[in-house]
Length: 241
Image (cartoon, rainbow, N blue to C red; front, side, top):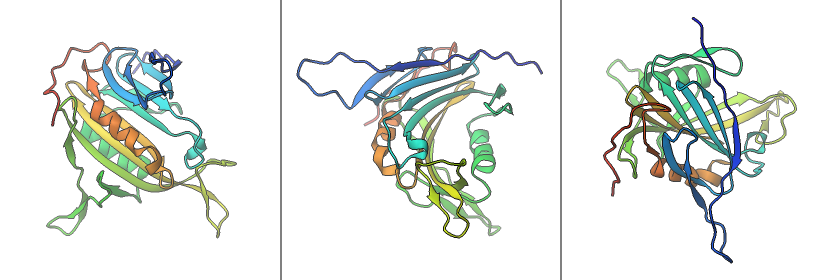
């Protein structure tokens, strides 16, 4: 299958008019370069957007140096996936998802498996034992405050080897001398007609609390306008109390 890639990289710094003598606000209202969503994001964080046609986009907000984060870079991201449309990863592999549930299942198995823990956003374990005695994950669903849309929300905790000579956001195994990352990644997966958005906070166990409130602010303020870039306009339930 021939895939046409249209990658664009946009690098900018958020700017909002300030009243003279006032401190910068904590958040800025952000509108995506495709005008398909808006959200409140941390003031002054750098914005990068990667796009492959209208099938996949990733907008990443990168914060100031924080030694508790992998490579010293805290971040938040908003990704759009169109259902059953493959796109190419940076390592050359292709990925494709049939929907939000398929994304969650593939990600847990291929990115975090075989050993990981699932938490809800209150950081309680999200497991349940079925009739056959097997333990399965329970992915909670919440209603996003501004849009009123439903989202599957969860935290994944796992360990993974760090790249050689990595200095920040890693711990050293005293027995082997190898460096690892304590991953603590928060997700909100929002199904939309013909696809879904994924809001992510890829933190570490040590740094998670440093910017957790910013991720909650992103979730609460997230407002999709269309079904992805170039998609049809969508109607949302609206603000929730």
